[in-house]
Length: 87
Image (cartoon, rainbow, N blue to C red):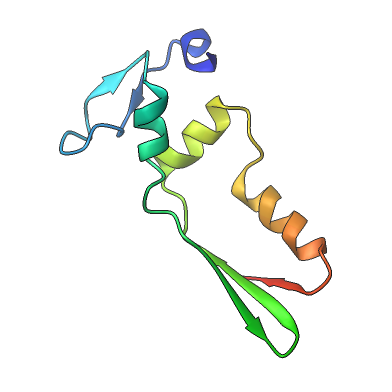
């Protein structure tokens, strides 16, 4: 896992204890960090407008550790799709 290679423990994934950190977070805890993220798709005059909950620094860090495309990259891809307006 990338976090083991960075020697930089991940904090903010323990409910009720945001300062607690770990160098070996479980997949379940990391996925739970995204439980408040919502994607809203609203059709308006033939186009679909998207609204995404802003990510927290912890969520952005997890995406980096997973080597996933950052949210701005995903939104840019949606913008390129015909009929999508992204905000």
